[in-house]
Image 1 (cartoon, rainbow, N blue to C red):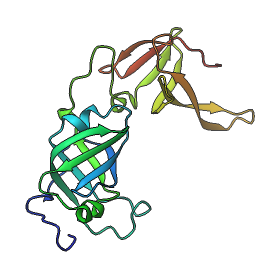
Image 2 (image 1 turned 90 degrees about the horizontal axis):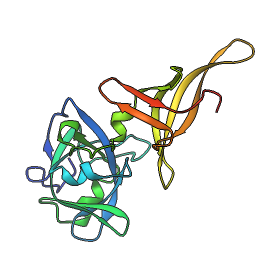
Image 3 (image 1 turned 60 degrees about the horizontal axis):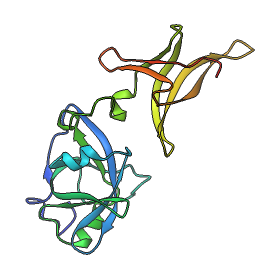
Image 4 (image 1 turned 180 degrees about the horizontal axis):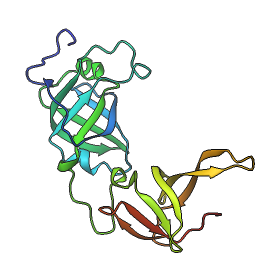
Length: 202
């Protein structure tokens, strides 16, 4: 632990929940009273705002070489989290010093999936869509959702599939499908399937 960091009241050594998902990382300190600036992995940070306890893990070396604030996994109690001027910021209970907030820069934020607030009708968390198979109206399998991408007005499904080149060699390729009702017929989370009005040669 970083010298001077009040671990008993701020950073509690913890076990990562079995259903934990990485939802963002700490970018930097914000202000002078211990607040931190967050980079969420989703355009909708509702899960961050609803969780009263966050789990942190050490950042990858490329993001923060020499990170020394803690080791393993720790949990923190969230006093307040909000959007301020387009940025997500948060204040942890007991962390009131900018230097201590800076020490957490780069830390990865995890939440238990079971604690996410229920999504509204026809709304989905990105993490629940990753890994689903995409099939069109003709029953053609278009691939598997590898990721989603925010493009402003809507999100786009990044669908990974196997393509055969002219020389017969199979390669991994990707197609983009707008995640809008015009093209998406149905989403079946339990069945791990997304039905779309989209052709393989688009």
